[in-house]
Length: 72
Image 1: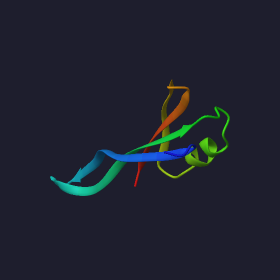
Image 2 (image 1 turned 180 degrees about the vertical axis):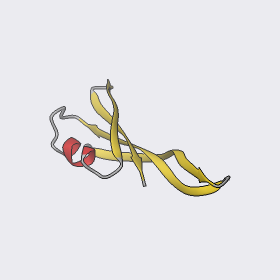
Image 3 (image 1 turned 135 degrees about the horizontal axis):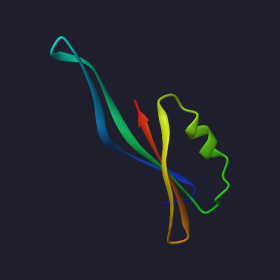
Image 4 (image 1 turned 45 degrees about the horizontal axis):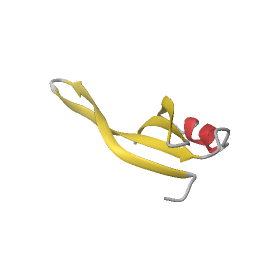
């Protein structure tokens, strides 16, 4: 991989019911920004996406990981 990069995967889904039937169904993705620079500006861009929330940050192998939950 070339850093910075964004990795995403289907993580879960949100299902709402009305009248004992499925009313809406929205997939949730785990979006992970991986970078060598801890102050990269893309973090703010991702965080401001509609239906997106910051999950956690961690460091592994001298790379900074920023994980977000994104409903799409």
